Length: 184
Image (cartoon, rainbow, N blue to C red; front, side, top):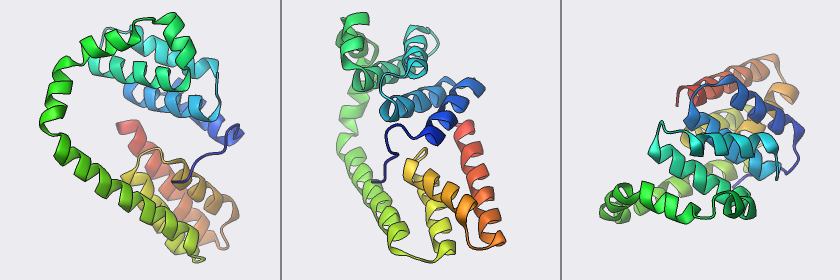
């Protein structure tokens, strides 16, 4: 899978803008998690996840935020929320039972999706044709929301595409991807 390089200032700025400009906690959680992965220790990422954990709005989202925090800042999560494992267990008992029922099916679907994502990424790398790169990057971004490799490919095509039409189409695709993320 393609990954954004740690410390990538363009990606960091874009993720901070998403966190600050959207009201949807689900999108804010995803952006904060991505931000914490590419900029370890980022205060905005950590505080966003902590705010979601402490928000009584959505128990499932609290679980996801707690899990995200424990991945990007495991020691901090243990200090601030020493019983984080218990919190996620208590909040998620019913969802865990549902997951167990559908585990085999979901795992199979997950593998198929991961294979498709891998093939799209390999296809983007393998081709020199910018139009093909653009289409594959759009499909990748739609399949795997927030995929940094797809995002970076579209941004590079906007900046460095060989023709105006490629740059315009890539910009339109990037706009569509960002608007689709905002609708989640």
